[in-house]
Length: 270
Image 1 (cartoon, rainbow, N blue to C red):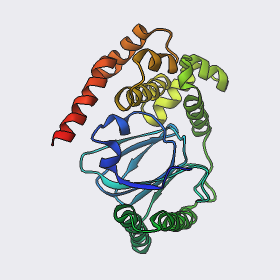
Image 2 (image 1 turned 135 degrees about the horizontal axis):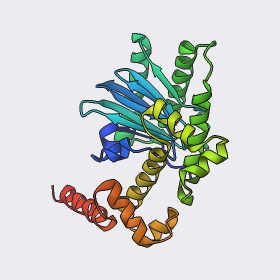
Image 3 (image 1 turned 60 degrees about the vertical axis):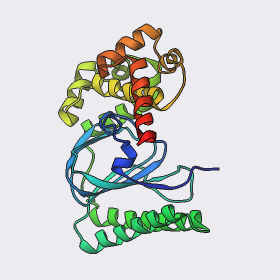
Image 4 (image 1 turned 30 degrees about the horizontal axis):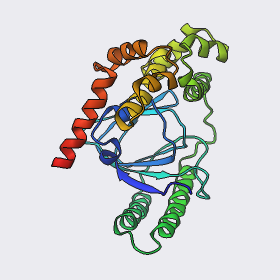
């Protein structure tokens, strides 16, 4: 059975941990993010853009992305399982919705989704699927309204999209950044320069962030032994993995795991 459709506030989704947004990563589900307050920055497939009020961002499952959101940002994220009959775009979309009627229509659909999820009434799953269909109809209409038929992706955008896809596919192999550049037919210098110009991160930093995010998820959300986490992520030794995590988070793997346990205990006791 497919996982259910879910709708969460951005705060609920991040669980109070900024790294869940700020590091390059992907989601197993398709997502639609709707921001209603504040501003920040997104990096989606290596392209950096500002995020503001009434922005709708559609992310296909397994799309490499990150957000740098200020504390004042408020919004909702709707998660739709892949493989469902609900049609989501094949490529990421970042839409700035200026039309008041379109804003109100989306708000009504999202409120209906929240209501069904919270009330858990009879046939709530069917009602959420129906609302999700309406959501994607709204999204496709918004995409048509903003479509620029003359706009074409630049060579840099195509390169970074290809690099992002390779990172998402292969980050667990332990391959160095130079191997990705070779697979793309460019030099490591050119790849890093293109990444930095487009999103402010080098190619190696994008790869490192993806690995750190996966490691933190496994360490803080799971119970797999640290040595197994290291092996899963392509590290030859647990000691090297520990140094890598310490260098990039300021904490050892065991400290990250204990930190999450303490946070959970505080939540339960509170």
